Length: 443
Image 1 (cartoon, rainbow, N blue to C red):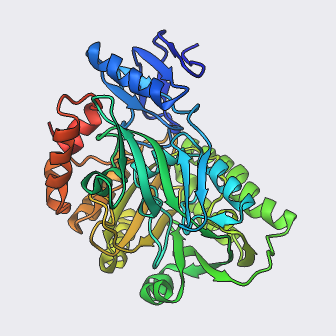
Image 2: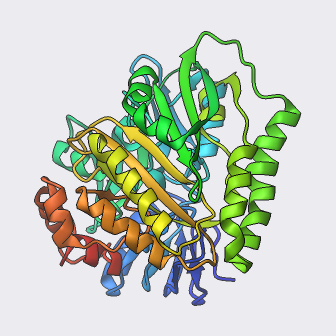
């Protein structure tokens, strides 16, 4: 009930909810178009009926960016690689394709994206539209690797965009938050498959923060996790190598990726939710459980990892030179508060890019992500963290929890007015609007 097969729609008002379970919506109807033409018809019919339209991927956003009480479009039938242009170094893929499937298909073709985030369950359009990113000194978000895209606009047109064709739309629609139209296909830059060697190593908080710029400069991809209530971190450095592949042993991979990162982590978070007083002790033990390891594999097997423990997340992008100070302020806040935080805090980086509302638009960036186990009250922690991040001019991730509005974004994004003017032109009647977009972009 509540779902539709390709080319059909469902009109029973079954609620949709996101992966974390913190967002629900009850659309009038749910549609799964079997073709771009059917999607165009869906948009036109919704506009005629006075209904709003939102496309939803796999629900990995923590915000209501895709929520609607109108027509919910599921792109699961719009999948697969359309074409590969080896001379140009590009691949064109349908918007509903899941990153996992894209990565595996590319690897079979001897190709890879240059950089990616740490999970690959999202659709390519959902991931790029909200600004999903990994960590990189020189290589940026998934959206920054886009070389072209197709977009169904509010009047049912199919708009093709690139640096040469509709460049003003291309500048914005790579991270469009669903406000400019529904993406139907994306052309990514790809390169020949390569190897990455990952080096994971525990490191003290004081050392990793003191040496942060050094680690950033010396590694193509550097990130670390700090365990609240401790002085312990785990660092990860990914750099290209000649290979050959030397993945973790099966037992080691199971212990690190399944037992510690999923199975045992699920159990200790459940205990912490039930008995918050145990969390600092658990954190001290957990932060010492991970050991140093080095392994080599193709990119998606190094960049990504399974995430089965459900959580709620806030992430802010800060000017890179301010991230260490902000992280130290976050630690001091946690230490003096009565908060009990069972999830590690994640720090990553990205170079400046030229996408209108990218969190890294126009500035070298570092990210701080805070998480809470699903079902645990998160508001006090996130509110206190957000106060620190906004004091540093932080920009929240479009798909993660935050309380900012259009007034704030107009101050931290120099090109904010450029985006809203384009939205006024492409969707004057707000066919693709919803409450979240009203808050973050204004009316």
